[in-house]
Image (cartoon, rainbow, N blue to C red):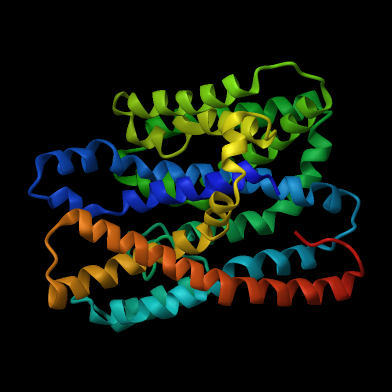
Length: 363
């Protein structure tokens, strides 16, 4: 486990949480509307962080096992699906009552949405009412499942490309062509093609795999670099990119624009050598990082249920109280899920795989 990166997961999950506080866009307070419009609406950047980090961490945990065939592809798939699918299914069940109350409810549409959500294929359908249906954050889990399926093949392919200058050049050119493609596609297709589409977002994941190879090369070298300065600098660089985001087309900001600062942030904190890394390695922040998957998956449902209950029963008007309650409830639900649902299931599946594989480690 890379402790600082584990803790950073929570901070980026929290950024996504703030992105979903859309009710602030209708606030009577002008400064809250401004914060929502120019800061919180950019919270989708957390998705790129998670996709890149996913590639990096999977390579960190499984690269050698895949290459030396000490783990079967099927066992890798079971381990990863066991990590995401139970929570997704639980969230899907919790979301059902909300969807049934929707004024635009249509049975045939609802059944189609249900099918794509159960099979975790909703992100492949370029229609908003499909990929954002039920528990909307789960579209990214649909992408993650796709990345998991590709991962063993990408690792094997990467080992062949690594020493081939022609193939490396071809991969580099493919990645560099993405911004050009973004600029020629009409705006109405931006979100469908460049934000949700797994065939495009897989490049975030591939960049995470490449980043791990860079990590391995740097790790072999002795360095006297000021790690404190690097860590502070990586955070400042991300902030600078964030501050100037208004000057960049939205389609670029969905991923490409933030690739450089995100990669530097992950790479620098992966070495765990600076003062900020030591702060991020404390147990409380690491625990928040560990429950961040549940926090990410549950927070939108908590928000929807609370807003509905508040309108009918509580009638709380103060937006700070509403945010605090939603945040607290999301953390409580995430904690309960992690301790009594995710960990027991994870342990169960890992035990089965360990029995099957002997003493080989399952991450």
